[in-house]
Length: 229
Image 1 (cartoon, rainbow, N blue to C red):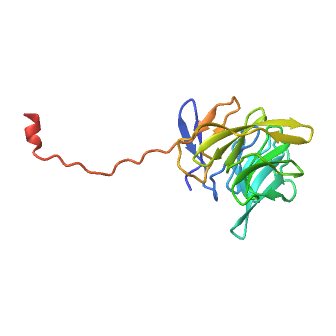
Image 2: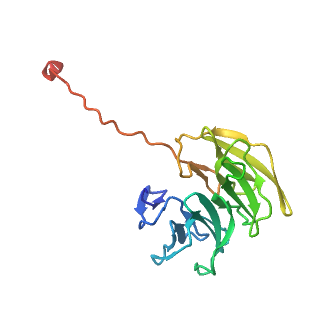
């Protein structure tokens, strides 16, 4: 895996973090002083860490719940919900929330968007949290990498063809109704197992793009003395 690190946006400085098992999906704690990645929580202030029950997916906005991935027999993903104390320590044993992957909390922590193969194909669903009630399908023709808008009234996801889609949500007490997906734009990245985009709290998109590989060809110039006459 590539090295995980922190990028200071204003100065453009990258600071690497200690390597961790499968560290491709970082999840910030609510105060930005703790970071869950791989199978551990790193306390940035004290440079210490504690293990978590699976690869971290997301952290609730109040800091009290962590969503993790557990691989079952190498073929099936479970989403674990792990309670976290106010001090950032694990609080009790994890519990299975749902079958699926790529789980993300809504900003208010009342819902979880995640990837599921319930229909036989990769699709985006939402269910209530902490107790799953009924999966509501968000994508209509394939989808993955769900991300909530900052106000929790919209979900973005990637459809086949790297299309970034948006779905408005009508949320009432205990229920959620999605509108038809709308295409926003095509992401400038090839097929990837990593999240190719994210959404900042001010609504801006952070998009991952492929970096062209440097050419390894060698050009030979013959009779070069004639060129400088």
